[in-house]
Every structure is written in structure tokens, then in C-alpha cells.
Amino acid sequence: MLQSISIQNFALINQLEIDFSDGFSVITGETGSGKSILLGALSLVLGQRSEGNVLKDKEKKCIIECSFSIEKYNLQEFFEKNELDYEKEAIVRREILPSGKTRAFVNDTPVNLKTLRELGVCLVDIHSQNQNLVLGSFEYQVGIVDTYAQNAALLAKYQLSFKKYQDLRKDLKHQQEIAAKEKADLDYFQFQLEQLNEANFVQGEQKEMEEELETLNHAEEIKSGLYQAYGYLSEGESSVISQIKEARSAISKIQGVFTEADSYFERLDSSLIELQDLSQELDRNNELVEFDNGRIDFLNQRLDTIYSLQQKHRVDSVEELIQIREDLEEKVGKIESSDELIEDLKEQLAGQKVKLQKAADNLSNSRKKAIPKIEKTIVSQLVLLGIPNANFKVQITNNEEFQQLGADKVTFLFSANKNGSLEEVQRVASGGELSRLMLSIKYLISSSTALPSIVFDEIDTGVSGEIADKMGAMMNQMAENIQVISITHLPQIAGKGKYHYKVYKADDEHETYSNIVLLDKQKRIEELAKMLSGTDLTKAALENAKVLLNS
Image (tube, rainbow, N blue to C red):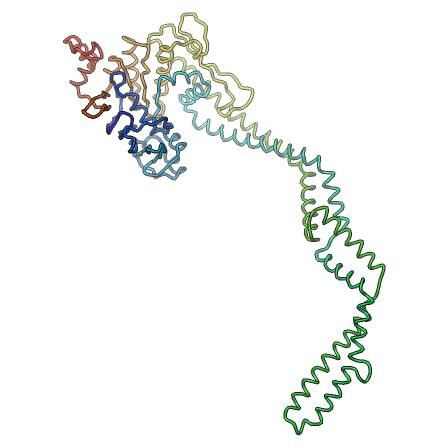
């Protein structure tokens, strides 16, 4: 329920604060007094986009703040989902800066417009004259049936099943497209994999073979170098090892008479051991190195294979070729198993379709069960509202495909004339008939639980007299279940309100501004009298106003 609205620096409003109560409230005022401004401010709080420059003072920001009692609306889950503080009273604020940028807050937490609109739908239903046009839309019509039938749980279950069904269809189509593309490449992938498998690469082999080939290509040079080095160290009386032996022998003779001799002897002995070990290693390696044309040919062929595949795959190492081989094995395996995956998805889709059909049937059956009561209620209300030959039917047929709102096609059919043929409402109903039909629909669903407050913006357009009186009575009856606020020009409706607000335009020495005030009983009588007879408050007009108010 809307509890209050505060407006600063918006259009013709400097500052305005007004409280609202439950039940039926009416708002009146002369044309151009600012009723649409008040409604526009409320729309902004509910998430409508700001159009144009609405600032009264272009140097200051506009602030619109509304307080709502939300205890009965079951909005705890919405607040948790959007990380908002939940309280029984929600404060919603919209700010418009001089730069044109806007900000929105719920309980002082910043929110985006999408979140604000989602919350706004749960709080207030603003029925403007333009909304009569949406009466012909499928979404609106099926929404009315579901609201009356209280299908929220069935619809949520269906939509969850529908989402799973759509996701599976999307996955299947995507997998089929991938399979078709990859199967065209399968022969090429298999050819590449076969080449790499035949090569049978081993990590680290490239470096080892390159080093071995380098050795074999210089075998004679290496053997010559090793042989000469070995000769210098070990062969003949003048070899290095022989000379060191002689030097060690000479030092041994002075060990008893020269203190440094022991150290020299140890160093010479160590050097001798190291050189003897080196000499033996040179000799062994000399014997191991052999010139082998067959081995050289093998290594050249193997390395040519490696280099060729590296160039083909644009890599620099055997390790990268091994990774490519593993990737190709995985890719080929995936392609070869794609048929199994596709068949599995088809089975899942078929199973989900059965579940979806069941959910759709449950939803459809609930709708069909509610339709007779909907038709009877709306026809009876239309008769009360001055369409004695009204005929209204809800046609429900099966769609060829599942849709977001079910497998049904819902169409509202209407005729205002006796024995007239039923046609879609938007094709045959006049403006006044649409207004009365829309009011009848709002009346129909007003007893449903957790509905938002309803604001009627001149829904009485095109009617007067007794019909207007009955419209007012209907709105008053709706207000027994939900908060109803009606902006009206008709005294018959204004007199039915539990609370009566007047919007007026005034001037001071600086500017023109709009304001709103809650009327007491005497002011209500005077306002109703003006609505009946004009500016001059005649005794007859005042008496008629009292009668309207007392009725």
C-alpha cells in the first residue's frame, strides 16, 4: 500500500508531501492543475525512465520519495535476491540530477532501473488511458486469467520446465552444428594424428639426437684430438704424467729438511691422480667414438621427420608435437563419440518434453476451470456499467509450440450488441466500452491475494451519470481488498471516495506551482458542488453534493 509521497523540484512542484490511506481515495482537480505531474512522479519512483528536463529549478536536483507498506506482499525473497534490507515499510527514492543523470534507492541501497521496475510492478498498478490498448495483447489476457485462477505456482513450475526444455534444445542444436562441422574435418584430423603416431615421438629425443649427430659428423676430428691429448699425458718418458712423477720423486727427497715439501708432495700426488684418471677417460672415449654412416643416415632421417612436422604445425620442439598429438587424439575421440552425445541429448529432450507437456496441461486445465467464472463476473459487471447486451468470452486454444506462458493461446472476445458476433476486444470495443471492460477486469482480480495498489487515471473517460455512479461503487467495492486511488473528473466517482484529495495550481509573486491537499467534509462538499455546477456554488449544487457524498 502506498503510504506517502514526497516530491521536491519536479515540474511545477516546489515541495509536496502527502499521506495516503487504505480503501478508496479520489484525486480531483481542474485540467492542467498538475494531476498528471503527480502521476508522473509516482511513475518515476516505480522505475519509468525520465524523459526531458523535469527540474523546476535547473540548478537543483529532483527528489521523489514514496513509502510503501509491503508486509502482505511476500517480497522477502525479492529483497534477499537483490541484496536489499527487508522491512515491513519500504522507502523508495528516485533522484534526478541537473546533469540529467538519475539515481534510485530502496531503503537507502542503490538499485538499477531494472530492479526498480521489478519492485514497482509488485507495489502499484497504474492504469492510464493508454493501458486500455494493452487489453488486446496476449500476454495481458493470459495474465488476467492466471491472476484470477491463482496460477502463480503452476506457471512457475511450467516456466522452470520450459527453460530446461529450451536449454536442451539449444544444446542439441549447438552439438549438431559442431558435429556437422567437425565431421567434415575428421579425415584431416585423422591424417594428422596418424602422421604423429607413426613418428612415435619421445620427450627429449631431439636434443639427444642432434648432439649425437654432431659427434658422428666430426668423429675423425674428435678421435684425433682425444688420441693426441692422451699421448701428451701418458706416452713416452716426456709425457706430462711421467714429468709429474719425476717432480713428485724430487720433492719426496727433501721432505725431511724442508717444511713446505709435504704440501707440495700432496698437491703433486693429487694432480697425478687427476691426470691419470683424465688420461684413462680420454682413452676410453677415443675407443667409443666411431664413424658410422648407417647411424648418421638414421639420425638425419629421424631429425628430418621432426623438423618437417615442426614446420607443418608451426612449433619448435618435440614436446609441442606430443601435445598436438594428444589434442588431436582428444578431438578425434570427441568427434567419433558425438553421435552418442547427440542421441543422449535427444533422449533427454524427449523426456523433458513429456514433463513440460504435463506442466502445460496442468496450467491449461486450471485456466479452463476458471474461465466460466471469469466470463460470468465480467458480463455481470458490464451489464451494471450500462452495456445490457454485453457478451464476453475467453477463448482458449492450443498453440503449435510451447511458449513462455504455456501451450495455450488466450483471446478475449467481446460484443456490446444483442446477437452481435463476438470479435477480439481491440477490434470492436469503443473507448468507453474499453474503459468499462478494463474496470470490470480490475474488479475481477481485485480479490486476489498480494495484488499491488491500483491507480486509475481517468478510467471514467467516455461515461457519465448513472454509469459513472456505478463505476464509483465498483471501485469502492474493490477497495475492500486493495488500495484504490482514482484520478477523476466525475463527481459521481469523487463522491464515493473514502478520502478526497484536490490538486490545484496557484501563483505567488515569483512563480506558478502545483500542490495537493486532503479535503475535509465541508471542502469535499464544495469541491463536488463545483464539479457539478461550475465555479458558482449554488444552493442546489451544494445540496446535490451532500447527497452524492452521503450516498
